[in-house]
Amino acid sequence: MLCFMLAIITPKRFTGTVRIPGSKSHTIRRLIIAAMAEGVSDIETPLDSLDARSCAAVCRALGADIEERRDIDPACPNPADAGGTKLAGWRVRGIGGGKTPALNAPLDVGNSGTTLFLALAVAALGDRPATFTGDEQIRRRSAGPLLAALSGLGVRVSSGENGCAPITVEGPWRGGRASLPCPTSQYLSAILLAAPLAPAGAVTEIDVPLLNERPYIELTLSYLDAQGIRYERAEDYSYFRIPGGAAYKPMNGPVPGDFSSAAFPGGAAAVGGGTVTLLGLDPADPQGDKGFFDILNQMGAEARWEQAGEWRLIVSRSGRLRGGEFDLNSCPDLLPIMAVLGAYADGETALVNAAHARIKETDRIAVMSKELGKLGALMRERSDGLIVRGGSLRGGRVDGHGDHRAAMSLAVAGLGAAGPVEIIGAEAADVTYPGFLELLDARCVWS
Image (cartoon, rainbow, N blue to C red):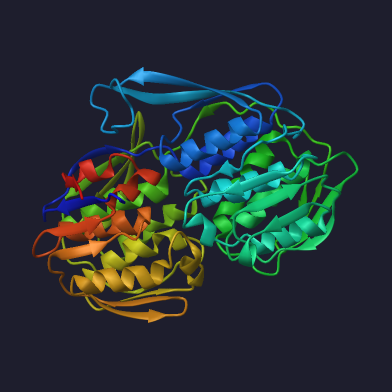
């Protein structure tokens, strides 16, 4: 029998100081690079979540040696950290050269789409078959365009229906020119990270007729730049040329805080009317979801940076939130929490140009429309987003659909509701933000 967590959120003002966990996007990229590098990498303050652990397990299976370093943390809210400790870092001894060992079992990425796509491409560098699988949601997420591009580069590929897991790839990576439409940026990031490790003389050329989530490509390119990797690109990112024969160097240093995760306590302050100070973020970081805090300012809340030893992002709201139209093409992961803010804002809030939010862990446009509707929100779906009529929400029971961002957004919605909000499947929050429900003083029971 399946068992689900029911989180009960009681309306309240959300205040305090919150240290934001490490970025999932940075953590997984650093793990992949360190696993493929020559030498030993020390990755400090990584995200310790289900997705990150899935990536570490896959990197180990591909041949990397990964050692955990843990620090004492008596207040650690994550029950998975037995003994009152927290993950302080990973020491990764990479395999070098992109050659992977023979694999006797499928590589299970859990719920991590980022791990699936990025690890899939680097595994395609090897000359032995590697099969990837994951949970039920992962087995519904298509890698079709990425697989077609890999096939055009000489890689053998096979998959389930519509390019979904289980997926098998086998090199060698011969290079060539392929077209790669990117409804998700992760397809292109996967190619960009793997192509430099192709054999010397193998040149990878990629035409990109469609690119969503461009800031995540800028994030990936920042890692190539830091590694001294040579590549050419069109100014509008519609074409890339990457020669093979390169090698990754060790990947050291702390992982920056996660702006995607920061949107939830930031949104909680805006909904609940309190003041929250967010630590661990860098205003110069290229993460696309950093734009959430500009949106908060446009909606009538206040998000301001201060520097006192380290950067502090302070979020508060004194008046009413205002609706507006917001283009989420570069940051579709914000759609669930933005739908919540729209439900509490005056007037209409239009969330547009985010059709790719339908191909995440769930169809987030449909899920948020359905679940916020149970709390009395007036929603209208568009093919590429949502129209939300602001007002007030009542209490009630909703379903997180196994989607971490939907579950956390619904928890934030409960802070401003007229009565308690119960969220079925709230344990999904641990995929990227262990401890978030505890921040909201949620009462959690298993049923």
